Length: 405
Image (cartoon, rainbow, N blue to C red):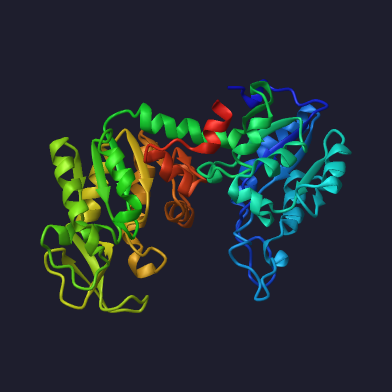
């Protein structure tokens, strides 16, 4: 596979798939978090410094799933035009914009670019051919550049036209990962294929069903698996423990029992909360108390791990050499229930400072480390929630395979 560092873009037009699917203010359409845009800058700057021109393509939201009442596309809500101002500021250059991503007009714009210029084309998902992975749409996109660079790990699990199919139209010497994509893949492969032991996986979130595949795959390689969040109550109830009104997937109790048994058979330490913070309702102002998980009153619900669980989890994390964290320990968006997630974040940061390798991924986990200002205290923060999850489930990501082939 070609490396972006070994490509000289002088006099070339690079077609770069980025992930500019950023959050926007609902009223003003101002960008509220430019993390994903910043993450793409090193790749863009490398091309420009070489003397190349850049054509950027991305999606923003799911416009064909959220049409106007009359069935038309809501262009104002989903147009990438909202990105131009901030991108221009970050690159210190005037970024051009194309009102479409295929067709004679945008092709002419792309072909007229000179060294150092940047063109952002319109949302690829305005076309049905994008999500369907249509060959004709992908071929039309491919005409915009001489070299294809995929720097959008967040969409690498989708076999869409701009993330996967377009790569078919470039030979091995004319396609590569961007810096972000390369870092994402390299760090994920390091954790799953070459983890220094002890390897601890911290898996949180609401549902066992969302994480069962990653847990089963991690049982093959991890020494410790820490469970937190709403999904822990499915494991507790499966063992006959009363959980009150806590979140639970009753149809997954048998799966939880099988996971517990498999962990035992493989000598993997699977940790489940021993105490928790419970509330009389799902509300930031709810009445709360700390109880053992064996002593949850009827009508109350668990919304965070308790102090004894924090001590247990912290000790396991601190003894680890490789750490994967995906999912919060509780409803950390509410201050009353964020201590568990914050404590885990601090433990991961401390273990990292002491020499462990830590990878944090998944929207909520990333939001947590950012909230607690610990993003620079861990080894790597992944930008790809769904993509990272599928990678650790053992799946081949189409966007990765398209470049590596």
